[in-house]
Length: 492
Image 1 (cartoon, one colour):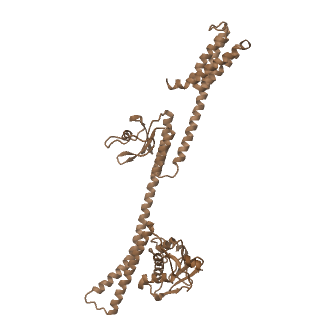
Image 2: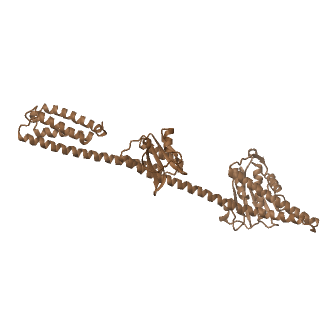
Image 3: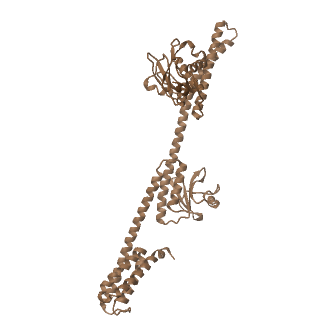
């Protein structure tokens, strides 16, 4: 049985049953009904038949109504013969009117069905567009495309294929699991021609090309879906939207990768610029000192030799601090920085920092203003000594050789606020945040490198804060906070 007959059969049955019911009801009062009234009543089965089964069911209703009209309501009754000429006219008018009514009702039903179909297509297009417009990675977007197409067209499975070298490979699937044979059809071995076309292929698979601007993006393949011309048109629209979304997502990923590569290259150049300067200076000093000491026949007294050896030692310490900073930055970037807190005095932290700096910052240059009753702080000893050392080294490098460096501290509730003040050129307000950034070199102050960046990272790892302000007279004042030890807080 064809699809059209199957669709029309319910309407035809309803029409014939309606004719029988209405005819039986009118027979009871036939003597009070005119021929025209009977014909009007028999319009109802025609309308019902067309509404439920279309024009073919309407024709069945017209034929059934014609025989019922002639047999029961046109004299002589219970025969198909027609007596008077006017009855022939009534029958003819009935057929013409009923066929016209059937055509009109069928047309209106088709128009209403088409309107509903268009509305449903618009709604589904809106849903698909709304889903595909979201910011997603290529992998997530492909999964969404496959699931949306599979649910919309009730396919057994849907696969999205993307070009991979010289062949197509399955990038996402939805629905039932693909069999080995189906995967072989989707991804034939190398050497077998493939195309990004649209149509029905082997195994009843429906394929739709995903293209944008006549450029192939991929291929959409589905199985187990019955598509009429309207469905194929809608599928093509879905495929166009999916292709645009996939291309946009691919371009976004490419742009992100390019941005990451550009950022990595920028940091690499900044690292080379900052570190090469810090490496070149001590290495040159060490090389020159060693060459002088090794030079045969060099007339050097004991004080000159001691000065050169001290220079070598100091520059070696500078190189060691630079390597330490680089290793610390690696720990920070990798997220492997862990804290080992312990109670310790601020004075002891300053002592250890000065000892690690050696002769770079002489004890005589540093003036301490640390109250005797300053509470203990609970910090990671190694990390906080590095903070002190980096700030003292920064102050020494940017202050005149005979200018003092002041280390002061005061307790404020559950924190201790420590300041390192130098007599250097100071830092402009709009440049104070930049000096804590990796490899930044502020043109006005000349402060650069990793020391300040590491100092801020270590302070913030303790949940504390570091900042730079103007010194009371001239220079810069770096201030950071440390938490008071819990035991000291309880005793206070």
